[in-house]
Image (cartoon, rainbow, N blue to C red):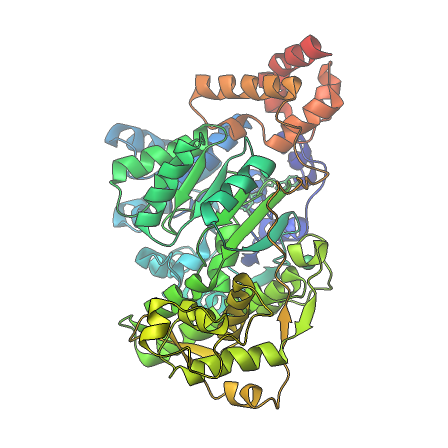
Length: 598
Ligand code: ADP
Ligand code: ZN
């Protein structure tokens, strides 16, 4: 029997285990239960795939999404591992054949949808099968509070009752404590050993820009940093998804929409294109993303603020699963705060729930406004200690200066007070700047004491000041009207000048193209013809087999071929991500490309 280490190198083509992988694998092989908490891209699949290859019998992997199953099975077949899936996408005959294979012991891994697993018929089949282990992937689907809740997941505790001797492993990338506790409780895993990894994603660079012309900013970001890359653009509403997609396409980007208002067929089609083609931009609401295993998503851009840190972490987590550099870019402005607070206040939820949601939004706003290392603030939120600075977030790369905002805050708050706490930001700024607009004249606001006292700042600076005051809860938004601002308890001492306040200097908007800050381990430049030839070869092979390109080789493997230029089988074998099966299948095709260019 092969050791885990041998399997890692001969089947997967990797040199060493990452983080907790080796410990989890040994624990499972020994027949114990495990709960694995690892960030996206941490390498969870190997934790059950290798024990499945070592232990006798078939491993049953419970997975909530069809696309995800198909992907993992395709990848395993490429590695020469006997794997299959059972879900509603199969016709009766294929499903029957797979069930037969299962009972005959011909499968190393079988992926099943939870609803199928729970049928009496299938449980009966399992009774006749030798089982190596159960893997419950995306285990946070048992959580009723998360938006990935799957009622069938709750019933998975049955596995332990019916098959008490078969080891179980539950895996998730959800970082928050309450969800963890729910998984343990609902799946009956209190005896399982917990393997908790750091939730840091060191290859993801977090950046937040102040909105001024969001689409142009996005276009600029894509042009300078991701001219050929696949990525996701998140928007809050279906309408914004549609508009943004159209606009991106008009600018020559290959963008597709995804939201719950589209038909199932179109959603599937767009998702397939995103996965199977190169360089497609998916413009989506949060309806998109779960179960997207595409490893080379090079950026996640938010055009609207997510609702919580949890959401933000999960959505940005879809970038850079392959460990190569990826960008998490968010455009943020006061309008986001207004929209989200309004949505929250008008929701049907009970008061307790609303209070929780408000706290979550406030935490996210604090993250947006922070002048500290963003990674530190984020991981702190998930109760993880992180030693700053990370050198891979905007605040670390371009430290943010703060300034004493005592006087400015007094002016801004006093202007709210003097105009009766009935007006929105635009009007308040007009008053401070002494503009004689029609509205100001109508309400005689040219007569209030704050009229024209704010000329030492320009419009954008006042916007920044008001945004920061709202984010810090020194002002609240009155949702009954049109987002008019009101004072809060917290604003009184500041208004009286008894309390100082520091504002962040928002980076000045550069009109010129910002010079591209490419990361040292970024992929070869788009105009590199050798790189293109390698990518084209990969796409050609992928199309022939009807699989996504990354199933053939990951970008990181392709990059290593590009850098090391292997010309013999033994050189090719040394490339990370090349095991015996892929060596046989693809070495020749890629070495031909190398030979042509070198
Ligand atoms: P997760 O499910 O945790 O998001 P995956 O299991 O999809 O992560 O793994 C992420 C990527 O890292 C995959 O491309 C996988 O092949 C790769 N990977 C996993 N373990 C290793 C390892 N020990 N060495 C190199 N690459 C690895
Ligand atoms: Zn940082």
